[in-house]
Length: 330
Image (cartoon, rainbow, N blue to C red; front, side, top):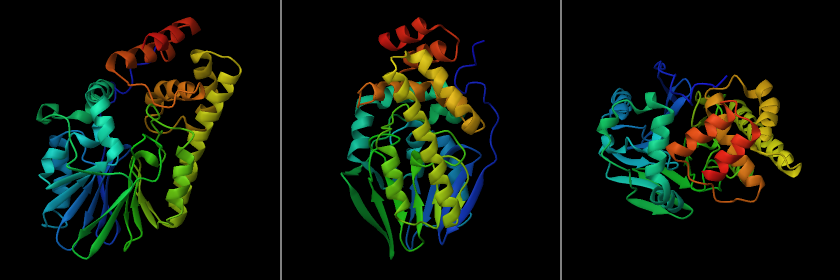
């Protein structure tokens, strides 16, 4: 029987937590929904990932105002996905920062991603009419940039490809706190539709090398304590490698997309089936892993139409020929 498309049936709002994970460093989390980071400096506030709409960003701003009245001067985009960036205008920040590669992805596929994500998960786009358009960074960088919030130093770094080719992390040295966007998840499925699965585990190890004592993942609860940080890194890596290696073995055997999907499900369900958005991500993850195993380095663009075709072919119970045809035509 066909499963309901992506997360259209997920209509229940989550409980928000606003947790101080280091001095002046906060994690806005919501039971597996996209997280937003807040860093309070001497003279201003920096926000990490903006939420999907200005309306939803207001909830973050309300939390910020419970701890400081300092102006929000910077919004940092860890990557280009719509649920992370389209709410940026609400903060009225003087600077929006992202990597050069993230800007390239916005140019190449930002509008398609907006349409795709909205159709997949409408609950995350509450107040969609408040979105003024695509969010464009005002400052981009190739590998790293250092910001000063008064005496507080904040480093933005591209450590390697992973969730997308343009991911950055945000490091607060004086608090030993890191914000990773969707490079790290905590008991939530990694979305791999735009991923570079061969590179992502290496990027995780570069994150680990900072020895953060607190970390805000892209989804899931705030991670406080080195043990919890490392455990989340381990789980994220295991998720990725199980997906990547199973799909690669299937391609080596000459299996098609639907057979690969079935094999990946058999390998991953027992370990990760309880993770947030697992069923939502699985068809898109397998499609990307299948492509990468065939040598397609630059992920194909997801459109609302391609989403439905792949979903129906894999989660909808079509036969192998149906799945293969959907990917060929997409």
